[in-house]
Length: 214
Image 1 (spheres, helix red, strand yellow):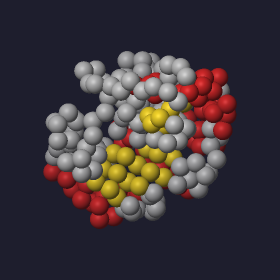
Image 2 (cartoon, helix red, strand yellow):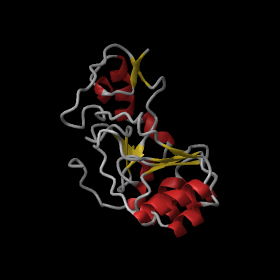
Image 3 (cartoon, rainbow, N blue to C red):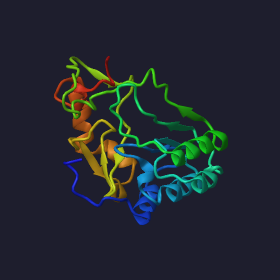
Image 4 (cartoon, helix red, strand yellow):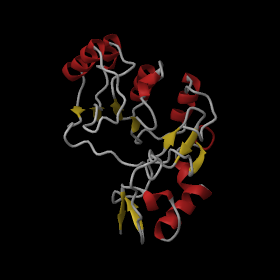
């Protein structure tokens, strides 16, 4: 991500400070802009969030996980644990190995609510125009995000909360969640502006495949 200039990995201290300002009825998704288990502390983060009372979802290729990690995660009743596989177009770069096969088999046999993407139905999207060389929508009129408003913040390693998982350009940074807390993000100037721009304006959503007209 060329637009990001912060630390590469989120620290345990940063993650804990974020959870302290996030209500426990907010589900924590481990996904976003990269493979969550690229961070060696991701399993600890998941267990911490679960122990604090959050529901948990994970979207992963399985890369970075070990069988021991999967066994540690067996205590977590996941809302969803979705395995992302190679797409039929050959665009996704997911190195295959016997070790990864063993980890994925253990996930399927051990964890709750495991879903594997259907290779015949994988839809490659432009991430609201952030993937070059792909056709993007030109959405007009008042918009919603998949029938809802876009309160699906992605938190960067430095604590900045970006509007959603489509905003790879970091165009709509809504606030520093570790400083203001989760609830304050939807009251920031950036977020309020985006809501207005979804009705009439130039929000990222104008080029997003997930946007729907009201």
